[in-house]
Structure formats: structure tokens, C-alpha cells
Amino acid sequence: GGRIVKRMGDGIMAVFDDPVVALGAVCDAKEAMQSVEVDGYRPRMRFGVHAGRPQRLAADWLGVDVNIAARVMERATKGGIMVSGPTLDKVPQADLNALGVTAKRAHRSLLGGKPSGIPADMAIYRIQTGRESVAKQSSENDEPQE
Image 1 (cartoon, rainbow, N blue to C red):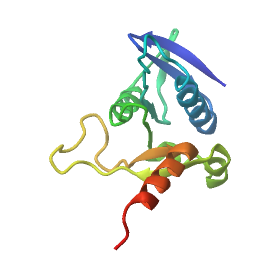
Image 2 (image 1 turned 30 degrees about the vertical axis):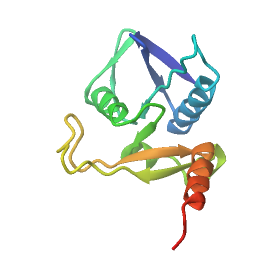
Image 3 (image 1 turned 135 degrees about the vertical axis):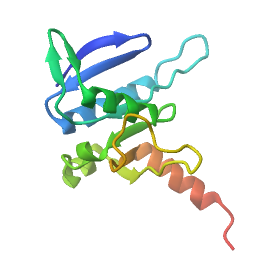
Image 4 (image 1 turned 180 degrees about the vertical axis):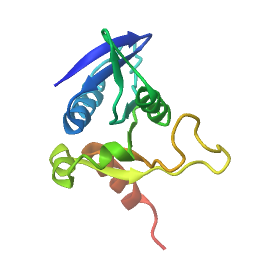
């Protein structure tokens, strides 16, 4: 449902017409990466999704929204999925449920300052897949109770 615009080193830039399809593709890619192993190493990708109005120039896409998408991705940890608030606003809760994901607002580090290239008032959310949510709940249940 999307198109790869370009490959940049070990990363890719893709565009989608629908943020639900983009989020689904990211979840599928993350799951597919779990089966990749090279000489005992399991690579982990980080993902950033942002919906906006980039400008097309020949086969490439440019503009502020492309830069924001890159900054959103930079906020992800290895194997993490980050989504901008404007994107999440376009994804109905029913579609998040169907994908088996939850969104939790990511808070900026007190020492990190304002992230460069992202509007100060833009929220960013960490997406947890069903497998991550189950693992987190399991580890929380294993903790000693007082």
C-alpha cells in the first residue's frame, strides 16, 4: 500500500496515502525483522511515521514534513515505533485495535531539551505491538508485590 522512495544506507523512506496502511506496514516490517539473523546478529530497525504534506520532486519527496518524519524516527529506540500526533489523530482507535497496538505518549528527557526539527507543541507517541504489551505485562506481574 506504499512506495519506497529511496534507500539511505541501511534505511528506507517510503510514502503511503493512508496512515493506517503505513502503520500496518511498519508493524509487519517489525515482525518480519524478528526472523532475520546474520552470523548470530539480529538487526533491529527503528521506525518513524508522520502524516503531512510533503512536496514531490520527480521521484523524491521533500519538505518540512519529511524532516519531521526523520526526527520522529530518531526518537525511536532500536526496534521501536514512534508516531507523530498528527498521524495518530488520523488513525481511528478501531484500527489501532485491529492492528493489535497501543499508543503511549513519549515524554521528552528533562536533560535532552527540545528535539530539533519537531514543532514544540507536537506530541510523539510510542507504539507498542501486542507482543510487546504482553511481555511488559508479564514482567510487571513477575515483580515482587508489597
